[in-house]
Every structure is written in C-alpha cells, then in structure tokens.
Image (cartoon, rainbow, N blue to C red; front, side, top):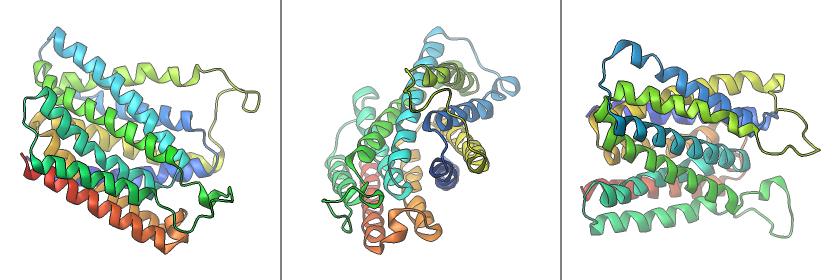
Length: 298
C-alpha cells in the first residue's frame, strides 16, 4: 500500500484546516464553511465516474449513501470543533479516529482485540487529556484565551467516530461497485445533504444565510479546496487498497503537523503560551504512539 498518499493527505489536512480556521477567525459562519468544504469534496470525486469503470450493485450503492451521510455528520462535528477551539487542539484529537477504526474493524470486519489495541486506547485517552489542558487559564475569568473548553474535545471526538464509521463502510463495501463508482455516489450524498445545514431556525441576532466576509473568502475557498482533495484522496486509498487502520495510522500525523503549523504561524493559544504548545506536542506524540500500538496489533 502506498503509505506516501495518506502522509501527503495528513499534511494537506493541516494546511487546509489552517485556512478554514483563519476564515472562521475573520468572521465566516461555520455552516457556510462546512457547506463549501463538502462541495469541494464532491467536486474532486465526481470526475472518477467518467474515467473509470465500475459495476452496479444495490448493496454497494446503499452503503455509499450511508457513508456519505456519516461523512456529512462527521464534517459538521469537525467544523464545530474548529470553530470552538484552536487548530492545535481540535486536529490532534481527530487522531483518535485510528483507535475507533481499529475497534470498528474488530466489530464489523472480524478482527480480534489485542493487548496492544487496548494499550492504544489508553494512550489515546491520556493524549486527549493533555490536549485539553490549559495551564495558563484563570478559571475565574471568561476570556477568549481560557476558552479551551470540553466542547472542542467532544466535537472532535464525535467527528473522529463518524469519520471512522465512514472508513469502515468504504473498506467493506466499496469493492462491490468499484471505488470509482462508490466514491462519487458517496460524495454526491454529502453534497445533497449539505443544504440541511441552513434549515435550522435562524436567531434574531443572525438573520439570513451566513455569508463570507471579504477578508475570509480566500482562506476559506483555498482551505475548502485543499480539504476536499485530501479527503477524497484518503477515501480513494482505502477503497482501492483497504487497510483502513494502517492508512489512518499515517494519516494521524495530521495532528502533529497542525500543532507545528499553529506554533510556527501563530494565532492560537499554543502560539501565545509555550506551555500549551509543549502539552499539545506531548499529546500529539502520545497519539502517534497509540496508533503505532494499534498497527502493531494487526
């Protein structure tokens, strides 16, 4: 399996997420950001059906629709995590996706739970705790710097779970139709569900659809394009080669890239307080150790 592809995707994820986070900081609405990144994913995947052959299979098509719905929910959770917390906090927690993938593999793809797998789960829990700590915060103050709250962790964990479910569905069913048919159907479902983001009742404080302020447009558009490409690439790799857990081990390095990127570029709590940066680097390193244990159990 070409592990260089998920490694490339992990780096692109950090870069794309940085663009989305910059846009969110400049006033872009989280629902609009989610919608644009969803459409970018569909746009990158749609041409596959024109250039490669597949075969019709009702169960495969149904699985592709379910995978698209799962990815839709995961993307919604991921953008919520990104809007509520720093890139270097939310992204490494998404590395728990690897442990979820391994557990779901055991449940649905007939693989055994090993001590290494359990050790990986424990290390992941410790890593999440480190990533959530803010040693510089004053609990008596409600400032922006103190808002490294549990909501970011919970949204990121929910996103990781739904992304893991998506990967397992892709690995199990994509070959029924061929990934080049499965993937466009999956991302078409994602695109068709995207208008639901704008259905909830609008509050008086924010009438109309959330638009993109002019200062946020380029970061959001570029970030969405990069995120769309790397997501399509990961799904394609899993659909063609399988090995969702091994793919996600390499892909989990996006947490490390995100911490380093935000530490270098600034703009988050990790850039303002080196203690937070050290804790997040330690958490990201533990996540990498956890996913290494998971792979060693295979």
